Length: 300
Image (tube, rainbow, N blue to C red):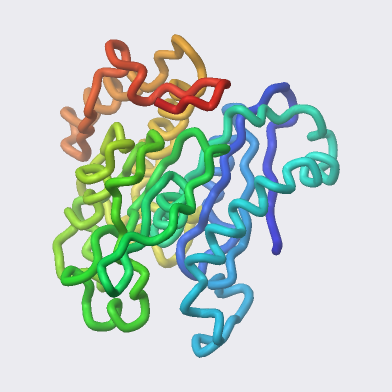
């Protein structure tokens, strides 16, 4: 497995973000987010999954139907080898805080992260699949995450992505959800509200950010000047950068008001230009227990 590690030049006790790319993307993508996170004190680890276009796996490869499982296993494999990663990356050894690990995923990567946070896959017989959650991951961020399947999938998606039948009732690890209100997916028969199911149905998802005019690449989060961005917007990218960073800081550090401050600033800007809104199950200042994580492993 190939991974990319990005880290601040200075600082110790650095929290870790494990980034799961979308279908066909790779460790080389999401530079606008990775650069911002590292500039604000996070170590970012990006594995390349088997579905990456850079690997050229044939669609009829026998392992293709189980790639979603391999994605989750690869994320856990990275966590299993943090020692080796620290030893290999120059000047990183001893600077990682293993008690503060987050997972972030976009699109198909959002489903990968959702599984690590506790979501399950519903089998064709209606049974709830195995628990693939990982307690080492204390908080998550889900960007344009595929949601309820079954009757909501298009025939193509039902045939090729049968695993897109999640149950979010078991997803109890704190998470922030981003969705664009113009994200019309070819995989679903529903409107863009499909991408908000995880917030509505997961007890762990504490906040939803809806970006007006946002499509699947949320203004261009996958790279600088990438050609597949259909809703290019530096403002939307900046919103994801700032809100995701603030959410993680408030989740990881006691008495950190970054998330509450960022929500207020975002809503003030959104009212002026009418391009976004946030919903939250709680006020962070009054009910921090709903999203706070602790060194002792109690993530509620």
